[in-house]
Image 1 (cartoon, rainbow, N blue to C red):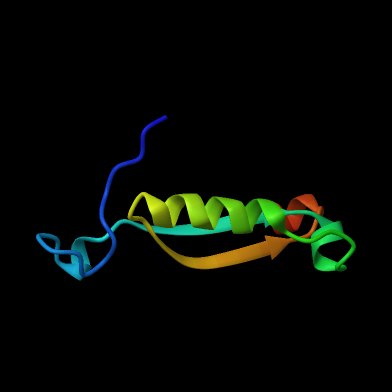
Image 2 (cartoon, rainbow, N blue to C red):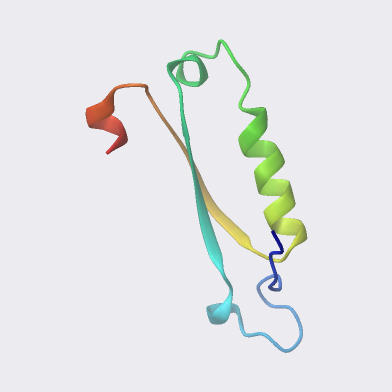
Length: 68
C-alpha cells in the first residue's frame, strides 16, 4: 500500500491541505500499562515519514460499547 502526501507546511502544500490522521488502538492491556503501545508509535512514525500529520492517538478498552 502506498501512502502519499506531504508534511504540513511543506513547500507547495498549504498547511490546511495536510492529510490528518487519528490513531485509535484497542486494548485493556494498553490502558492498564501492561503492554507498551508500540504499534501506535510505529504507525505514527510511518505515517509521518509519508507526510501525514498524526493529530491524536487514543486508546480505548476492550468493552464493545466503548469501541463503537
